[in-house]
Image 1 (tube, protein in one colour):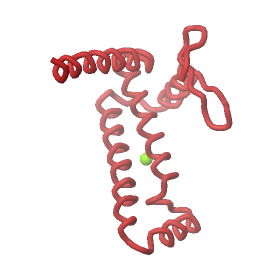
Image 2 (spheres, rainbow, N blue to C red; image 1 turned 60 degrees about the horizontal axis):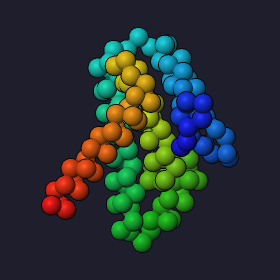
Image 3 (cartoon, rainbow, N blue to C red; image 1 turned 120 degrees about the horizontal axis):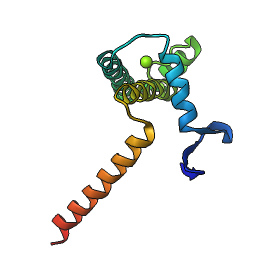
Image 4 (cartoon, rainbow, N blue to C red; image 1 turned 90 degrees about the horizontal axis):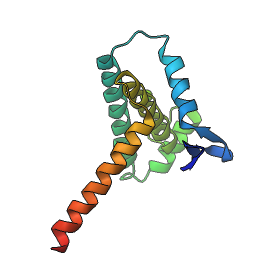
Length: 134
Ligand SMILES: [Mg+2]
């Protein structure tokens, strides 16, 4: 992630660059088809977080079995990928979509969230340093 012309940018797959604002517009355009409230969006976000937890649980659970790789290979063949890193990526993308949608319905941009969270982390570092270095 880097800044260029005042806009936060992410480097994406295959060296494509997508401006956060461009992606936010994509989310906004898609969301316009649905007249949902903030509560609907937050519930959808919670549901997607649950899907992330479920995939990670299965990825962790299946690792304890000697047939893990066979199971994952079978899922790939069947197009399921329920315990596969690709499925985790897919569900995290759903979380990102609803997170941005929630932010938009709350009147915030992704940049607003990044700036405030970054400040929070800085403040937390200062507090932790004070606590452990006194
Ligand atoms: Mg999903």
